Image 1 (cartoon, rainbow over the protein chains, first blue to last red):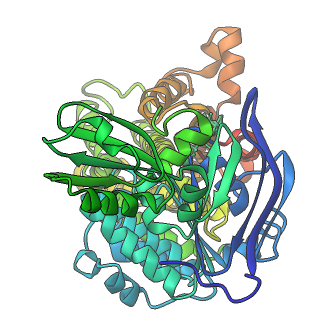
Image 2 (image 1 turned 180 degrees about the horizontal axis):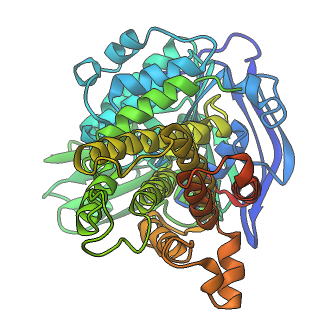
Length: 311
Length: 247
Ligand SMILES: Nc1ncnc2c1ncn2[C@@H]1O[C@H](COP(=O)(O)OP(=O)(O)O)[C@@H](O)[C@H]1O
Ligand SMILES: [Mg+2]
């Protein structure tokens, strides 16, 4: 999963000082970021954070008020036609004609680009070959999204933009899409996606940028962000024999909370879990339950912004 | 510039034909109205001595209904496509906006021609002699009128807030335009303010042109209404490129 880079990674998208407002609403303020070749980069934040606006400015579909953007060395506004041939775009919430057939959409899209891949093969890769004669309106949510990925990839683009691709999908369909996207990255493409699902960002993205109220809060690999901002670990131990005082002397322990039998031990650093195990073994404490809670991007988000992602 | 035009036109045609009410409404309803009115006013009689005289030209009304039906359908398609993000999705491809809109106008004109063809067949079958005019010339007048009214449809499609209002608003604008088009009573019989409005409407000039061609006058003699229809087309196109929203 980890992104392997040899030396300096090649920058595919570079954004600096991007700003965009709608009337009195400041949608995006002073966003700067770089996306490297061959990575899955996720822009994550709650609804209304400015993800779509940022992405569509980068795609050249909206005109920024300030800042500079380069995608594959091109200016998305002035060199839109050249860029369109090299990027693939999936919009949030954009549909297709209700009664267009899957293969007709593929056929239409491949007619529009100067180079195009084999449509049938693409459908097969995305698991849509059985649906090639189905009307768009009869597809399931996951099938629609896979078709949109197919359309975004019909011209074999170097960079793929995916806006909230799995929103509204069931877990099974979501996992299928994650696998597809990982596969796309593994074939050397760069993927820029947005999501408000922290689990998705964590499972899928090589690097993420957290955006809130139009401002970038942090950028880094998910593991890196968690280690940097949420180093605490919580271990939940169940035991009927002991009281909270029994854990005195446990290395790295910060706090113990708990009642008669379930104790939440909070401590510093990744080593804390091992320390608890060692301590329990050494002290010969008889436990009936053991569980460790690893902080997630969700916790990082809460810590950095002071509110949850769904608030 | 028109890359993808034929592909898009062909696929959109198929998509339109799959609409349950699309083809039937476009092709069938004007013909049915034509036949019903034609029977009512005994279009088929050869001597004009018995029964009620048609107070207006029934074939021209039917042609006008075809045109308005096409425009309403275009307005509905554009607003539904906008609301569903289909226009946005198409616009992110190398398709130019002009290509997208031209394809839809082209389809509407083709279906107008088909519908007119059905009308002529129905006329031959039920009312022999009633359509005894220069048909190619009359068809051209119908298409020019339709094109001009379609451009007004663009303006309507640009300003209606949601797809749900598109049909009612379109109908509320277009059907009264037929009422004051001069088909049922002379435009000069209208109140002065209404008369001025009526004279700026493409439907009025479409009726004038069609009536003229029907009565055997030449296109050159109808240059005022031809010019007016083209002027409306250019003005509406200019207005809609300013106010048109893709999403
Ligand atoms: N076309 C628009 N007109 C007016 N306001 C908009 C428009 N698009 C987005 N906004 C506003 O800008 C902010 C950011 O929106 P958006 O970029 O869509 O966020 P996200 O994709 O993260 O949910 C929101 O407050 C939203 O209401
Ligand atoms: Mg969004």
